[in-house]
Image (tube, rainbow, N blue to C red; front, side, top):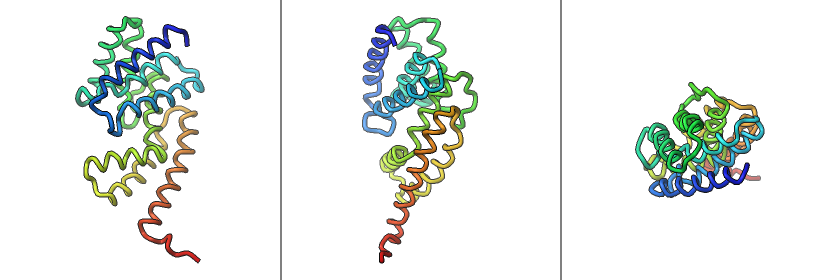
Length: 200
């Protein structure tokens, strides 16, 4: 990445962090964005995607969270506005806006480019594994969802996500996270049922 691109990423990071300040402390905070950015960067390098489009799409993918739902649509509009304001290459803006617009597709339907698939995969990887479980419980607590319901929901939801990823690199990462998640949930369920008290 050249100096100009690094400056663009740095500038966007500051802009997005400020715009997302109202969702600080939630499961979709800027810390989530940073993780998705790093995962997407790793995927892009391994899948030979356009790194610049992936990184900008990842940084901007949840910028609409503070602007209203559906956040992918408000985010796509904000993306166009933000990139125009920093004089980003006009011919690349729409491709990045489409990454933001399509990252929310629940089953990954309608994804057209490798870059869209990579940001979608990166966003979903952050929902898999122990990180995903803790994010889910964090969200459930804020919504006052019963603890036992959330345990059941985690196992069902995380298992469903595992088979939906689009790139081979993402699937390998997901497989490891999935195994960690299953182990975590198995231990949790033993503790909740008190079956771990049956020791020799």
